[in-house]
Length: 506
Image 1 (cartoon, helix red, strand yellow):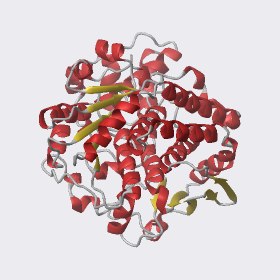
Image 2 (cartoon, rainbow, N blue to C red; image 1 turned 180 degrees about the horizontal axis):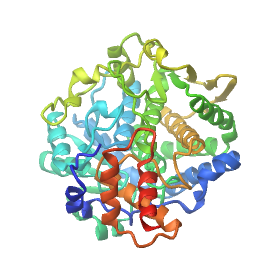
Image 3 (tube, one colour; image 1 turned 30 degrees about the vertical axis):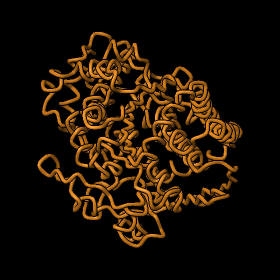
Image 4 (spheres, rainbow, N blue to C red; image 1 turned 120 degrees about the horizontal axis):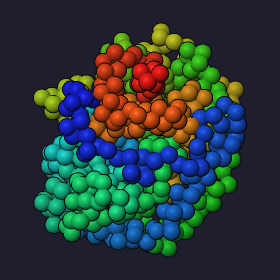
């Protein structure tokens, strides 16, 4: 549920969230009709997503000279005794935490890199409604983490317009002597023309901008895919490689591996997981130590993207999520969190704003070996094992087993590869489950201003496809808020509003 109390409240501020002109919100021309292909030609659907990912990597690499200056700034900060803070919201928050985990794996005793996301670490599990809409939350969060005058902030936002991230980067200019970085994936001229808060950032000389434009996403608005992939590469390559030559050589090894990867090997896993859900069963992803944060990220991001029940805590009796994550080497909730993050989880402890920011709430989520025990009475459970070792990675689900050998490349690229594979897998599973239409997010959950606008645009798109052309944006938003009050978890709000508005015009 959104933090806006009514359609009237939202419409007073709607211009702040109308992001239709942005490329990251647009449907990709190559993936038009993707939902149909999932059912009629799954190998071709796999090929299309692979092509879109590959093209994004190529665009990124052509412009990767920008990373050199970012790398110099990162390493001069750390060498001078400062720290590097990574900030994001939603998918960019999770990629920031992933980078922090990678850094801690390679530098166990170092505190030089710290990541945070809107809502605190609990937002890894599920979003806290509205947190990304407040710039003051980003500024406050940064301050409470002890950001200082010798520290560098790298603020990451897929679209370039997230208020939380903007608030953090603006506050960083006031605290630190080091200019912060601002990473985004839309063209400057588009942001300047359409989003006033983005215009302020782009034209601020005290903020260094790094534009990573790669065009539309494979699924319109699903920035967890190509946008967060290239942003993870940019930050990771700047952090983990001081030398341009090594950075280039490692990227080329990764790119060559990705281009020739046997993507059709995913097909039986996609079909099997979709079938498990249709049989009313559930999946537990069992992950090995090296890759747990990547698997965790993909599985939790399915909830807001496809309007699925989010991961539930042990104390909840609400609708169970379709899948869950278990780290079988851990034996308690506390241990599973520390394994996942390689540090104690950070809770905002802002109960006056949201009780879910407290440590007590976070500790209700347990990803240890006990997951199957407390979830088992609810439904039949299937185990999807992702065993990522130094040399080999193995996927195993029921009778399906697929292993591949990693090339000699940095663990950053292994995480990015696994991320893209899981993004492809989960998107096509949801295609088989009819959780999007063509390449439009018709099951989006409108939990903040941006997602309300995305929902409205998706409804308008469906109406136009059905020659219903005289419905206003205001009418659509009013319908969205009416349906949010009564819709159940098994219905698509976008489709429900589409049918309501279409019938009114019949």
